[in-house]
Image (cartoon, rainbow, N blue to C red; front, side, top):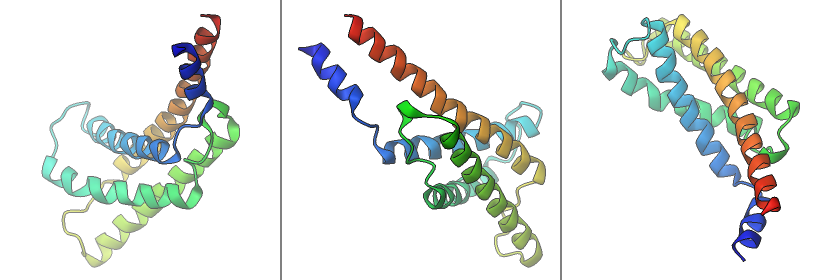
Length: 152
C-alpha cells in the first residue's frame, strides 16, 4: 500500500513553483558564497550592504528565470536542454545585475547597491554550476529512489 502511494507520488511532476523556489534559494546561497570567496573565504564583509543587495538580486533572478522558463523542465527528465535554459537564465540575470550596477554607478540611484564586478563574475560561475548540478542531483535522487521502491 505504502509502496503504491510512493510510486504514484514519484510519477507526478515536481511543482514548477517548487523548482523556481529552490532555484531562487540557490541563487541567494550562491550570492553569499560569492561574497565569501571574494573576501578570501571569510565572513569579514559588510552584512548591511549584503542584506540590501540580496532582495534586489533575488528579484532580478526571479524575473530572469520567469522570462527564460528555466524552471519548467521536468526534473526527472533533465538533460542538456534544461542545462542550456539554466545557463541562459543565469547569463541574462548576470547581465541585468551588471547593467543595474553600472547604471547605479553613473546616476547614484541606490547608494548602498554597489556590487564589485568580481563578485558578479564569481556569482555567475557559482550559480551556473550549482543550478545545473542541482538538476542532475535531483534527477539521480529520483532514479535511485524509484529503482529502490520498485525492488521492494
